[in-house]
Image (cartoon, rainbow, N blue to C red; front, side, top):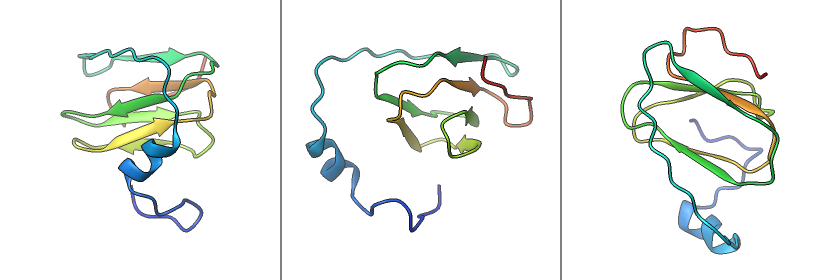
Length: 94
């Protein structure tokens, strides 16, 4: 993701030092080329990282986010959102 003037220029470690994490849950998902899932509104902070391929996240208030291998996206808002394996597939939040 390209730097954007509306986002702070903190490093990941600086940001994480500001966040108080109370629990952790890890999940690795191996999706089929047309796979995906929806996350309902919640109060969790979610981290997504692509290990290979492209992942599209939609519904977070920033439009569609395409996550490439090695990139990490944090969803801090708790908004319902959808995650799809292939960026060319239709993505909607249920």
